[in-house]
Picture 1: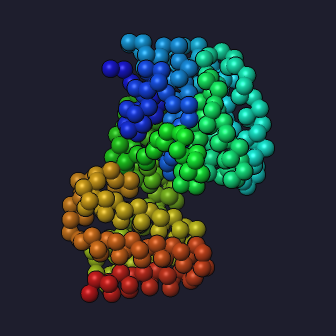
Picture 2: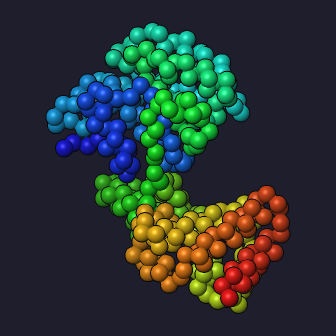
Picture 3: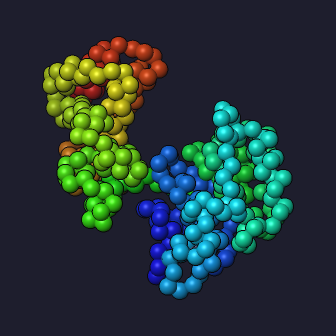
Length: 343
Ligand SMILES: [Zn+2]
């Protein structure tokens, strides 16, 4: 069996569901790709578009898409007029004119292949009017048209749109998977970072995105993100395991700027989220690269305690981001409350 969507990492559910349909030329005329930023929505959309138009689609011995036929090469280089990106441009919302403009061209036959594929970015930003305008074409699209809607929140799309498209959910990559991929890239010479510690830290600070991990690897030793991640790890330890006095003392030492605190709290929440996932039998960690070690820590505490600490971190982030509260007060309250709840 050859690879399905070889450029899309992880996301096996999408590969299995969608790959077989395309291979058998039974693909849907509309897909919604729903997932957080950095989870591969664009890569998935391009791989689907390429696969639908691939000259070697369904042939034995070729990946899907093959990546080497003239159609694949043209799409990869961004020259194909049969694959078009549609977006809101500089406007805050996605206006109906953009959709009308796109729809005015769908009647024309494709230039090269059998299909014209429209990739609609940030589809959830479409106004209700824009969505309604699109809806008419989703109901009865020309046979040569495929729509791919990208969104971080498919719930923001009209139910009538969702019911006429096939929804695919992209997933964030786990930290161990990112680390493994970084190792592979290092052995292939794609990245040059030799320091194992730095690779591990980058994998866990990347919040599930390989792109972020590669960026972190290429940054200098003093990258502040790596420092925030370390503080976040110590913070989580203090709040869950260290004890009340130690937690308060540690929180007193945090003298970072407001924006830095937002990052620290975000990483701390990712770490607690991992513990909760591990306790629930989900081993797909986003923050910890060593799943076994994290699991060994997670079993030392209880689920209600983790949920309590998660909620406190969330509240602290809200106080810092939106309420402009004093940073030292927020962290000291966080430490005090974390241990008050535990009594
Ligand atoms: Zn091809």
